[in-house]
Image 1 (cartoon, rainbow, N blue to C red):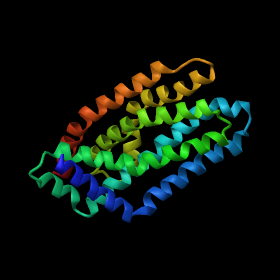
Image 2 (cartoon, rainbow, N blue to C red):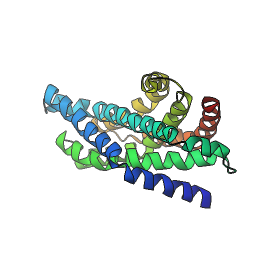
Image 3 (tube, helix red, strand yellow):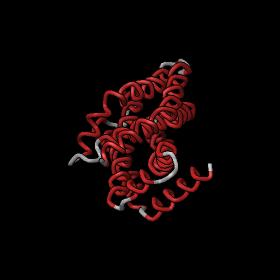
Length: 220
C-alpha cells in the first residue's frame, strides 16, 4: 500500500502542475452540454434527452484526459520506469488509474449538479445523476486505461482509442443514461445502479492486469 500511495501522490502532484489539462477538459464538458441546450432549447423535450447528453459528454471528456495522460507519461519516459520497477506493474497502473479518475472524472462529477440545474433536473434527479456517475465512471477510467495502453505506439492514437473502446463503453453508457431516464419515468433505478457498480468492480479487478500486459507489448 505504501507503493500505491506513493505512486498516487506523485501522479497527483504531476497533474496539479499541469492544471491546463483538466481545466480544458472541464471547459470542454461545460461547452459540450451548453451547445446541446442552445441547439435543442431548454424545454421539456431537452430534459428527456439530458441523461444521454451528460453521459456522452462525460465519456468523451474523460477519454481525452486518459489519452493526454499516457502521451505525457511516454514523452517524459515514465512508462519505461514503470516497466523496469521492481514493484508489480499492474499495481502501479492501478494507482495511476485512480489518479486519472481523481483528476479527470471527479471535477466533472462535481460540476454535474450545476449542469443538471441548467437542464431543469430536480433535486432527486440530480442526486441520481451524481450517484450513477460516481458508480459508473471508475469503469470508464479503467477500461480507458486498457485502450490507452494498447494504442500507445500508434500514430493519432486518439482516433483508434475511441474506435477500440466504443463497444466496451456502450453498456456503461446505456446503463448510466437509462438510470436517470427510469427516474424521470417515476421508477427507482436500483437495477442500473447495481449493474454499474458491478462493472466498475470488475474493471477495477481485471483492467490493471490487462493494461500492464498491453503496456509491455506497446513499449516493446
